[in-house]
Length: 255
Image (cartoon, rainbow, N blue to C red; front, side, top):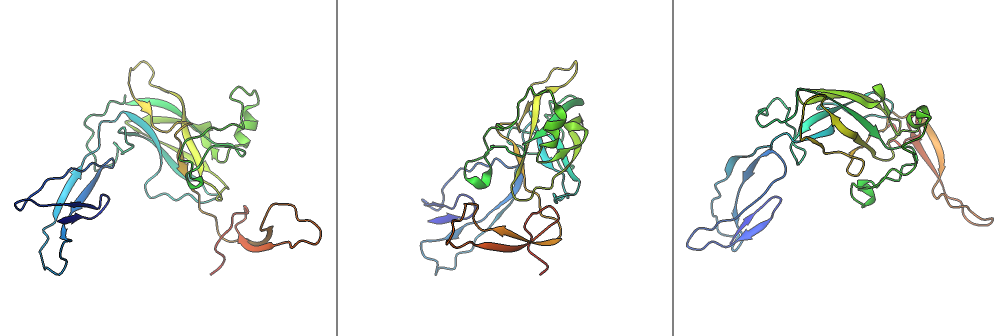
C-alpha cells in the first residue's frame, strides 16, 4: 500500500507492482506528487517524485474581483483591487505567466463594483455560514444615493465604475473596518457595448469576494465591555483594556 500525501491523503494498493488513481484540481497550479510505503515504514523504499504536473486554467468565461498582486488591505489606506477575466473556477486569465488562448471577453467592457453596508446581514466565512447571503439593510431604489455611499463598509472610488481592458481593470477602495470581512461584488450585467459575450460574473451579491482589512498602526488605548449585555446592580462588570488603531480596530499593541 502506498500513501499519496497532500490534499487527497489517499492510500492505494499496488497489484503486480502497479495501480492507477485519479485526481482533480480547481486551482491552476504546478503540482508535485510523491509516494511512500505505509504498510511497513521500516522498509527503506525509495520514492521517485513526479514534478511539473501542471493544471492549466480554463477559458475566460467569468469576471471576478481580487486584491491586486502585491497589494495589502490596511484600514484607512487606499487599497488596490482589480476586476479580471477568469475561468469558471476563478483562476486568473490575465497574469503574465498565463497564455491568452480561449479568452472570450471583448477587449473593452464596463462594470460596477459594490460592497456591503454598515448594517449588512451578509453571511461571512468566519461565521460558518459560507459565502452566500443578502444585504438587507439598503433599499435598491432609494433616491438618496449619497446616503447609500456613506453607509458602505468601504469607500469605492468612482462610485465603483471600472473599465476592463483586455480582461483587466483596476479600482481603489478605502475601509476603516478591520473587525469583519468586507464583501465586494459586481453589479448588474457586464456592459460590452455592441459586442456579444457569454461572460458572467463570478462574484455577485449572493457569492461575493470577501476581503479582510488589517488594522492600522496602534494609536490609542481603549476601554470596552467584555459583554454587551446590560449588567445589573450587584453583578460583576468585566471591562477590557486594549490597544486600537485610530479607527477603533483592535491591534496587537506596541510589542
